[in-house]
Structure formats: C-alpha cells, structure tokens
Image (cartoon, rainbow, N blue to C red; front, side, top):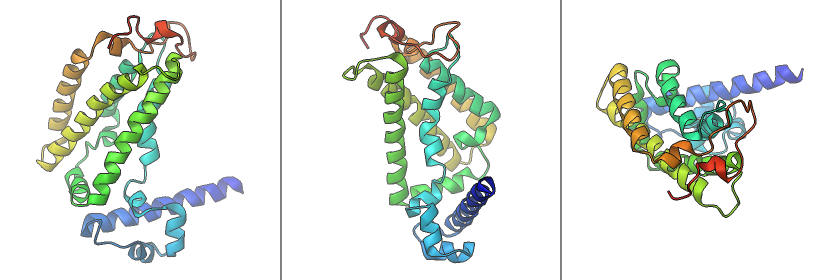
Length: 230
C-alpha cells in the first residue's frame, strides 16, 4: 500500500508540473497564477502548494536533481578518475546519451524565453547555480578528506562550475539563436575540450580516486593533487 501511495503522489506531482509548464510556455510565467494551474490540473490550490511550496518550483521541478548532479558524479567516479574528469566525462555522456540534461532538445528556445522574460525565474536560476557550486565544494572536501578551513575544495568547485555555467549559457544562447541540436552539440564539445586544457593540473587531479579502490573515496592531502598552489 505504501508503494502504491507513493506512486500516486509522484504521478500527481508530475501531472501538476506538466500542466503548469504547458501554461507557462503558452502564456509566460508571470501571466499564470497558481490558482489557474490548480484549476487546469483539477486539484485544489492547497494541493499545488503541498507539492510545490513556491510558484518557481512548478517551473524548475527537477531542481534538487540538477543541483546534485555534479556532486553525484564526483561521488560515483571510477577508480583512477579525478573529480574534474568525472564531471567532464559526465557532461560528454549527457551530450551523447541524455541531451535533455543539457537542454539540447527541440523547443528549448521557447523554454528559455520564458525564463529570460521573468525576473523571478532568472533569480531562481542564479540561486540554483550558487547551490550547485556550494554542494560541489562540500562534496569535494569530503571526498578529498580536507580540513574544514581548507579553501582548496571551494576554489576547485568554483573553477569547475565556471565551466559548467559557460556551457549552460552556450546552450541558452544557441537555443535562442535557433541552432540545431547537432550544432549545439558540436559547440559544446569544442568548449569542453578547450576548458579541460585550460584548467590547471591541480584542478584536473583533485580528489583522484586511487586505482583499485573500488567505491572507497580518495582521502588525505595527497589525494588533492600534490602541490597546493592553485
């Protein structure tokens, strides 16, 4: 019974989100009220707020997953793989296997026009980027076994997230310009290759998981890439 109840809750949440997204794409985010979403989804306003505490949550309904994605890739990195390599490899896999994760889908330009035309959605997008960098910094510190006052994990996270942010901006810019998915993929691949070359060796080597360590995380200052200068 518990499983059935949870499945129904997920279905209700997804239904409300889908209805809301359709309305936002049709009329714009600011022109649609939560009451109108509730009416179109045939649920009460309270039900909408039970699943989505803020109106912006209806639009960015996968925020938690998006914020945790870089950190999850670091935690799941292979033996011999560094944090940076895990993140870069993950983005390349997204381009080939999960393009929707990068917004590489037809019609994304319409989605982004809704975002850019709403100050509250732009503010939420910036907050999501900040949260992603913050969580990544904490994950890097844990995985590398750094001391609490060590600034290196935060600085490494900032550099990796700068690349991540640039790629997201590139997708948005290409989408708004009407570029095809293949054109966007080629541009992202080019930028990923250049970005990886530009990163310093210590950033590229940070939190490298020892070969043959299985799921064990790299630990100790030596796992952070040797020389501490950034």
